[in-house]
Length: 223
Image 1 (cartoon, rainbow, N blue to C red):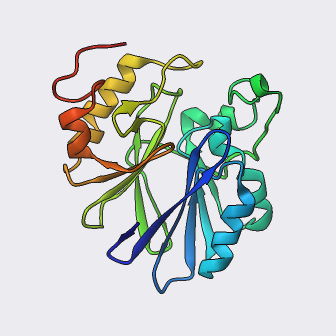
Image 2 (image 1 turned 180 degrees about the vertical axis):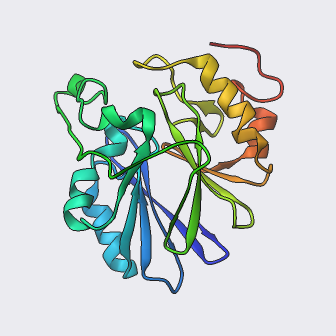
Image 3 (image 1 turned 90 degrees about the vertical axis):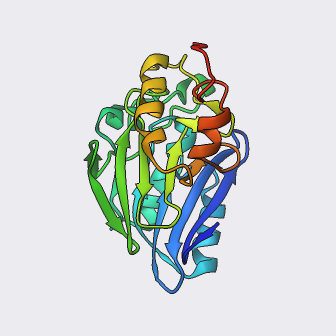
């Protein structure tokens, strides 16, 4: 997807069908990797193909399918800070908390170089990423919003999907907090805001507000 020269390219890892994103601006050498999953070879192939250099690694949350590529990315780009929400930090190094142990993987990521809180802004690749904390799918999931584009873009992880929301039955899940965060923070963004989720196709704030059966205007409390 291209938005006024900013590129958001999904890279889907098999198995979990998880979306990582390579983000950069046309004509710029800097790039951001969001939620590097298991298919690091494909992520690296895209990085080389576009001739960009990774300046920042963002995790929306600490579940295994979203952090599996952290170690490889840090090995290849040690100068790129690894960033995650403050309340997700322990998931990086705890295989039980990040759910990898249940798949026999015992996955451990390098620790974060920076922990972020609600309202902080990160700058990389000529873009500004504003942090919203929306827990409920995991203890401290964050969304990264690029407000300066038209339309704005939000990298939402597993907070919301096209026609659905993140499941809340994992440790640290809380459906009421998830619903409140989506309605109070994500739906406060303009309807045109593009939502790039951790699984499945892109959608918009307006589309989910109108028709999402879990959190949309006509939704009942289903959790």
